[in-house]
Length: 79
Image (cartoon, rainbow, N blue to C red):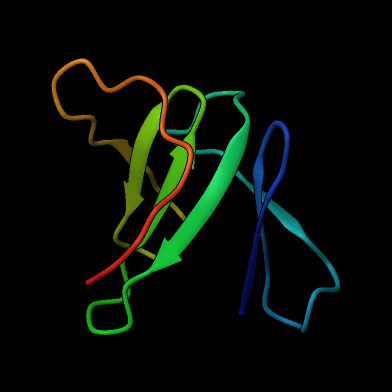
C-alpha cells in the first residue's frame, strides 16, 4: 500500500502506485506535507496546512486531532 500527500489531497494505492484513490472522508481540501504510518497499530497520521489528522481504518475516515492552537503541521516523527 502506498499513500501520497499532495498540495490538496491524500491518495492511496493498493497496487504499487497505480490506480490512486483520493481519500477525503473527514479531510479538508488542504496541503498535506507529511504522512506517518504507525507500524504497531496501523494508524495513519497526516500533517497538513490545516492541522494534524488521524485515520484508524487505512485512510477510509479521518479525524482532526489538533492540540490546542495547532493549526499548521509541517512534519511528523515517531519515537
